[in-house]
Every structure is written in structure tokens, then in C-alpha cells.
Length: 132
Ligand code: THU
Image (cartoon, rainbow, N blue to C red; front, side, top):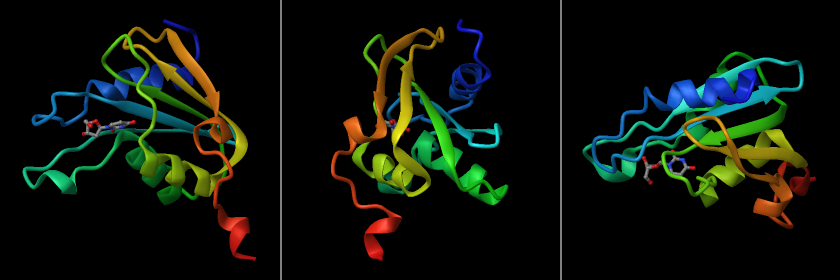
């Protein structure tokens, strides 16, 4: 396990994922520019489309606490292959993160599997500044 509290938060919260349908547990953690950490897990629903992703949960926790700017994101999936954020979550991250923000995918043991910038994952993105 890397000695990084953001990685640990994502690894730990993954174990609290509610994913009885996919059985695919995901944890995510965001770090704000002022150093706070917020974590979220996927929460599925018997009405399948109503489930929410781990990243969405972490962002909601951040916003509820007044956080508005993300410095780093860590995503922890259950396989050896990196769990990259889905398309919708890439856009959700973009709302609060600059294109050069690091998005780090880790294993359940906390090892880095892949590191990208947000603009690698969502090039030529539409963001808050695109409206003005
Ligand atoms: N999932 C996430 O929570 N985050 C991702 O980055 C990819 C997918 C969830 C959604 C669903 O509960 C399960 O993983 C399978 O798609």
C-alpha cells in the first residue's frame, strides 16, 4: 500500500461499495486544492439505471462540504486492470478540476496501475468556462 492518504481513502471506501448486482466494487477519493479528502463508493439499485458511481459519490461529498476545486482523483477498482472513470464521471470531475488534474487508478492493494491527466481522459472538454 502506498503511503498516500488519498490512495488509502479510495482503497478503504471501496470495501463499503453497495454493488449486489454487478459485484464490481469501486472506491474513489478526491483531494481538494486546500488538502481535504472526500471519498465515495458505487451504490447500485434494483432499478439498475438508478445506481451511482463511486466518483459521483466522492464529488457529492466534496460539494456538500463546500469543496469546489479538485487537485487529484484516485479510483480503485477490483481487478488488475485499471478502473478508469466512465464517460459521465469524467465530465463530473471536469466541473471541478482543471484539464491537468491527475487521475490515478489503483489496485485494491493500493498499487498504481495507471496515471492520466483529466485531459488525457476527456480531451477538448466542455467545462464551466465554455459557457462564457
Ligand atoms: N463504476 C464506478 O463506480 N466507477 C467507475 O469508474 C466505473 C464503474 C461502477 C458502476 C457500477 O455500479 C459498477 O461499477 C459496474 O459498472
